Image 1 (cartoon, rainbow, N blue to C red):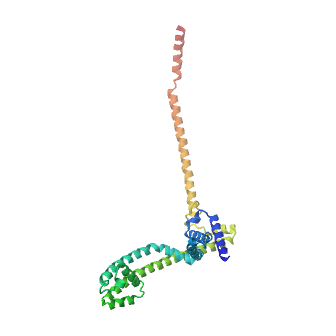
Image 2: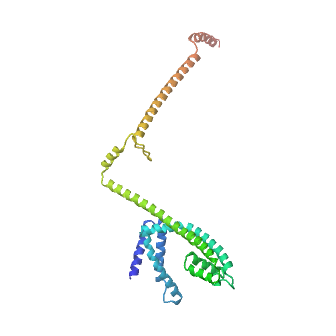
Image 3: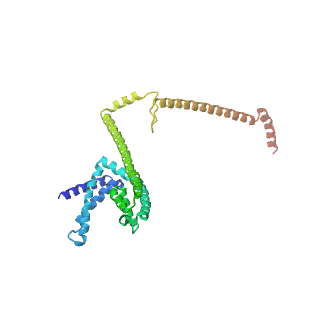
Length: 305
């Protein structure tokens, strides 16, 4: 019954998150993990544990239900920092492990060739490449390396001490500690980022609380007091600094002056064109004397006709 209650709480949480943001819900890794854990929680109710064929699967699924404890990661800031740092160090750690594998491969070939003689060598630890790899893994973890060295000394390989020391220095003190150092550095970076975010959110919350305690008129008065001619403000969509307003008004005055000058030039140009048209009309019109001389000729021509 307790398990069903916990499963019901997880189901309600999943449905609420999915209802609030159904599209972006699947973009978070923590949400995907929660959904996977929820699906694993329902699987035992669909598998018949009394069936021999499915009894092993039921036991495995029942064991995977212990992953429910990892749901606490999304509620803990420290755990989220740790998981983010581990996710970012995966690529670097893989490179380090590849280099360590190459180092172990080289030393495995050397160890098998030097100490893996079937007649006089240590065939238990160095008789094959697989045994040599397992022995080198024990040396990397520095787990029982003295016993491995004692076995080599018993077979008369006293110079193997230099081989063991060099491999431990390279494998453990260099590569192994390098991977640990990379993880610690990333954890520190994520902790610093998290602390900065917390500080910013705290400061914004304090500013919002201060604003909520003031009225709109108080905010306007406070804004007026903060404006000075020496302030340099660059805002988007609106500019409210006094230097900008002065410059804008000056530009408007100069624009008006330019428009007035253009209007005057337009009127002068129109007057000049009107004068030219009048002169052209006066030149093309006939004189009065010429019109009087031409009129009797037209009358005589008309009588003759």
